[in-house]
Length: 378
Ligand code: SF4
Picture 1 (tube, rainbow, N blue to C red):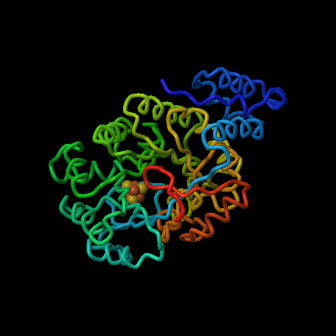
Picture 2 (cartoon, rainbow, N blue to C red):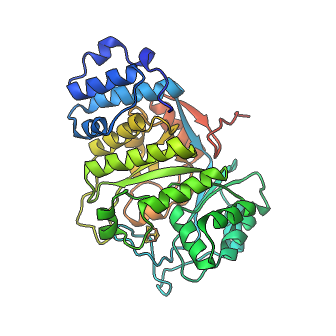
C-alpha cells in the first residue's frame, strides 16, 4: 500500500511536541513512523479544537511531496447544458427543459465559445452539465470531437460518473462501453463531481435520483482501467455527519488502493443560496480547513489535494495552501454551478492573478497540465 513520503524533515520534534491535542499529536507520530491513518484518526481531525496543530501536520505532508510549490492550470470550464432531470435538493444549477433560462449548447456553439476563450495558453476544458432527458450518446461524442477539432492539443476533462451513467442507460450501453466510446471521441480525464457524500441516508434525503456510492466508485474504477484518470470530490457542510465524511474519505482511499486512477481530491463546501436548503449556513472557514487537512492526511494514495478557489474565495484558498492543499484549480473563465448557489468569487481568474495568489501566500507557482505534469514556462 502506498503511504505518505517521509515527513521527518518537515515536522521536527519541537513542533510535534507542542501540538496541544494528544490525539492529533499521536496521529503525527504515526505518520512519522510511516503508518497509515485509521478512521478514528480521521474523526480526531474533525473533532479537534487544535486547528493549527492539524494544519502543521497536513502542511508537513504537503511539503514532503511538493516543497513550497503550489499548482494551477490554464483551463476553461464549460457547462454544456443546465437541463437536468435529477433535481438534487442541494443544486441551484439545474433547470427543467422548458424553463425560460434553460440552455443547451450545440457542439458547434460549444466549440465557438472555446475558440473565443480569453485564456491564451489554454490546456484543458472542464466539461460538465446536467442529465438532459433528450440528448443521445452522439451528442456527447460530437461535443468532444468538436471541442478538439481546432485545438487538438487541448485535453478534455469531461462528464461526471453521474452523466456517464445517464448517457449509458439512455443509449442501452454499459458504463464501461460508454466510457470506451467517449475515450475514442477524445475524453482524456474525468472530473470528480457527483460523489457528493457516500451515505445512503444523505442520498435518499438530498439526491435520491443520483447513482449510489457503489455505482459512482465502480464507474471511476472502470475509467481507471481504461487509463482515464479521474478526480474525486466530497460535498460537505449540509446534513452529513463527520462520521459520514470520514467513511467517504476511506472509501476513496480503498478504491484508490485497487484502481489507482484518482489524480486529485477536491473538498466542495456546500453553498446554499437558491436551493431548497437556503436556510442552512454552509460550512465555516474552520470546517473547510479541517476538511482539506483531513483529506491530505487520510488520502495518502491520492497525490493532489485541491483548494478550489471558486468555492473558498481567494483568501481562504491561500490559507488552505498551508493546510495540506497543493493546487488551486485554474483560470476557469466562466463558472456557473457554484455561482448559481451564491459563490461570491469572480467567475474566472487570469493566469497572472493565480500566480499572484500563490506568491502572496509565500509559495512558488507551478503551471501543470490535466495529468498534473509540470509545464515548463517559455
Ligand atoms: S447536482 Fe448535477 S445531477 Fe444533481 S440536479 Fe444539479 S446538475 Fe443535476
